[in-house]
Length: 210
Image (cartoon, rainbow, N blue to C red; front, side, top):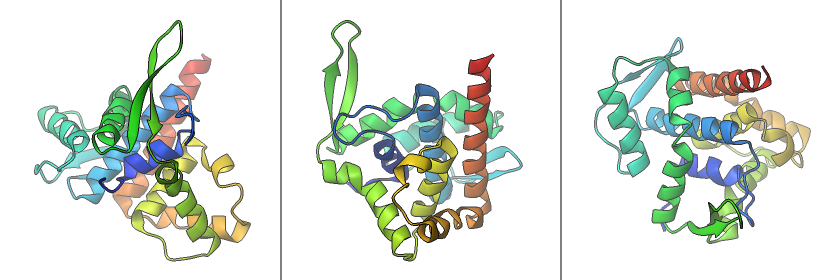
């Protein structure tokens, strides 16, 4: 099995590891995954983000199909640079992109659910694998261990979607500060993407209430 990427970690964090049911609404889940995939492209050096806009700086396609699909679209639609526009647009397909990536890697299995309205649920093949992203964050935060870059980005995205309040509630206060206090110190492009993801979710909530 292939190692998990950032969006895979977010996918599992946002899903119940037994049932595969989402802990988020569709809008927040899609935007969180979109932010995760864009962060992957920043980490791999394909794009940068500044002042609410993104730029492709390396057109070399990544190995994974999800990253390839997004980068190819960005190259084709190069005149579209507003980060929030990309987040909203990508959020419509990111669940399936990440789910298919996990399916191809053998981390999930697709099963039909619902008697009247049939849907596909992606349940973890190994519950330990599915639980590991959150367990890793909680363990490193509690022990105040050195954090990987992807740990901090994942923590920022969990906070942006509101998942941190329940998923990390067992972490001591000093551990939470160790973890969440690292988010403002992320490299500028990643820090900007986390903030833009949170803002896009806020926009979606306001539009839904009107």
